Image (cartoon, rainbow over all chains, first blue to last red; front, side, top):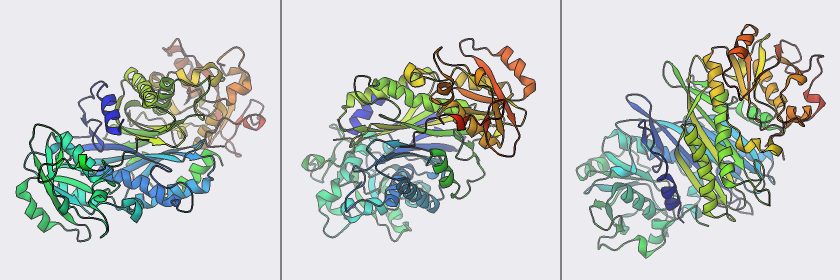
Length: 306
Length: 306
């Protein structure tokens, strides 16, 4: 069972959310009406040793980088809604084999990145777990109600843009050191041109497919256009490795040239990857010849699969 | 290292929270200024198999009750602030030995109780953990700014009241089936008489001591006055078992008789346990003869100690 299928089947059985929950579960964050102009964003994500980082051995991830990753993942979710992160809370289960110095380092990794992004740690819980090091983090943010960007906002004819590069996130250490695309996401929504966004955590094709699914469209994607993280990165790696934490953004075709021209972040490429098309057999991410790209290779990384 | 000491030393090194964070970390929930009249409450708590419930064996806790407990613990935190819980998000790490049916049952335990309390699940994350079943839950609630009840609000001369009974929570199953004291907490703050509150998760004496610590007071407590959960419950069990999830509430001495008289919940006792006193050697929970009650016996249950 994939995480998507599991959550989808569970969440669809819930009573409907009240009207002030503008974005119900299923997007990068939930959004709640805060006042006439703003939504409150709330999201949760977790890191587990030996699932999201190396827990032990000679290549063990330093505690501080593991903590950094926990927060960075969540900031990426807020960025994908076009929001500004404000507060975080974290719950940590420390394995019995660790000492508290490890947890202190882990939390310092959260706090150091929080300081960089102007985010405040406002709550937490710590407990000891029998075997595993686990930690979850909840992020609370804010977004203008007329700017919030869902996965579902793409329309046929829209162009898919991406930030950054793809593939080999684990082997290059990118998954531990990446900068969440908060400023890029905010810039894109501030132009008024961003119609849909998602962050790529589980692989370019899988997350692009999720955008297609939410928007009820197909996507024609040009594999040759996808920027790769290193010269050696293969198409398969760029397509499915995941943990890129880049943004995918749908914009109207008439806005593309101006956006590419005015993009102010010289250190982060903004790239045109493809375009959304209507279709019957939905959703499919296909190449220019209509071949299903996901059917041809790996399908991304699902942290819920064993 | 106790959880209190660890968090205290870590949190005290953080940059100061911005002014809109009315209640910084250290209370049952954090509180953020929402509008002129209301605060947003946010809290996080977790349950870990074989720490908070029996993970396996003939006495294994049913998944649904483990999930119920996860939410109930968090609702108790909101109750202790005098607030109304509204939304929850959960992050679950499912051990590799479990199947997804177990997780579905666990989440159903969350949702069933959420429905009872009018609370909505608005987000979640699921992943597989190598060994442990872990889950954290974030609760978002609301409270009137002029009613919010902190641990720190008690004054010398105030009387300590408690809801419910104490001790033997594990052996009686109370820790899995308790009703969080949301209606009782809301009633207490609505009277305008509640000056400080905390919920008893780690033991009556330890949580009373936390209230003393936050309020910079001592507490004279009458052990004979403490209502016990069963006829066989000893004083030591009532004092230190924990997981009672009852409320401790400080009120002015002039309000006690009226509160006890008008208390509308016939199924939940409201009991006068003692009174707060100023002192030099702070904070101490003592008996009527001034003996330190915590020094005489067990000190409560700390989920962070190994």
